[in-house]
Length: 314
Ligand SMILES: [Zn+2]
Image (cartoon, rainbow, N blue to C red; front, side, top):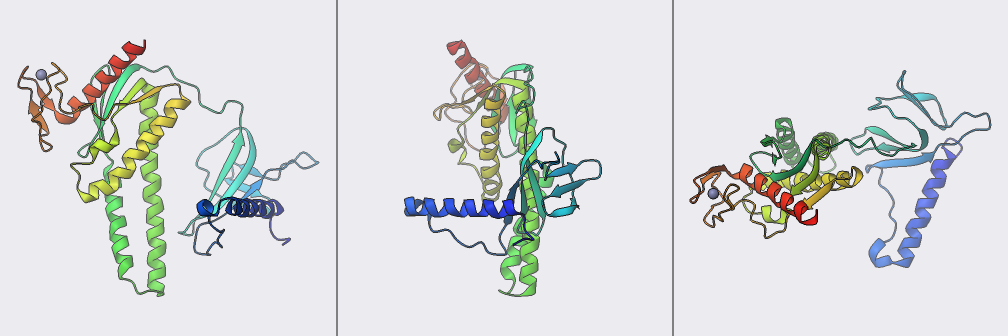
């Protein structure tokens, strides 16, 4: 027991106590605590402490790229993804299923957020689609954001690895190897996808005071299986990110009502074109003659929806 960081052990005990307490209070909801398997994700959390001599038990050396944790005097060489300021509160060390180690560090700072920027744009509407991940209409014009090609490739690779794994014999060395490879690829795809979604949502929130999106449930029609598999998770995650970032940075996120026909209304004259088919990517308004790109038109309408709303609420 002496080899192990005592705070890490104490945390495990606290977690375990809580797990049992929850279980006895509400066994239907929480279930009996289970043993972690060695193969699963492993982690521990430990707190930073100030020693009587003023030193802290957890330190990060940004110049040399080292992390110092309790009981590991020689430090751990690490890739430090970004710098931070403030006092370290605690760290969590994780070993993922693919066998990689990550450390996440919780710090206390004066101002928990970055400075809020003045938005350059008032309202934007976002249409989420298959051909382009997002079509965005703002006060100036319309532009499209592609779902990154490397992500589509990576996700196809992931599918292939999954198939390969299913052909490996249970309990074999090769199966073990395939599991590791799959887990590694999975992590990579997840990280890259989240990186893309974070950057895009942050840029949109920085730029706009009001952001209008549509309800995702009406998107369910024209998808192939593969696209559905990729995009379902990305779209909903993207909206989650927009939602909490809007709160952080004092922006307004509007979800258009489900009944709002963002695609079928002409964004120029307001004609409701009932006959628009799902496969029609471009259409001409029978009343005013405007030719619309389906996604751009939808984005413009969503923007209009937001503009009306803010006029109403002042
Ligand atoms: Zn029209």
